[in-house]
Length: 109
Image (cartoon, rainbow, N blue to C red; front, side, top):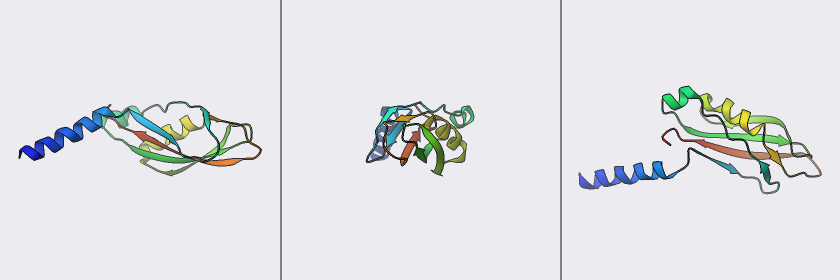
């Protein structure tokens, strides 16, 4: 029983130690120069719903986002993630690139 309580406390500590949501730019080439934080949907927060949303941004040569494709994640969070990434800016390049991004929503923080 004590080890079960210890594991639950450790898990709870891990949840509290992480940020509300983490953003990871997984591109090997272009760097993000301007990020916009997604707005956590109120209903998702009220219901303690979280998860990871994966999107792919088609980035123009000037660094602006042309289109967003949702690759996975809870439907209640995908619009917030796509709306935020649509406002991101990347470093300029000579051609369009596809940039994968993961956004993690954590309702307990």
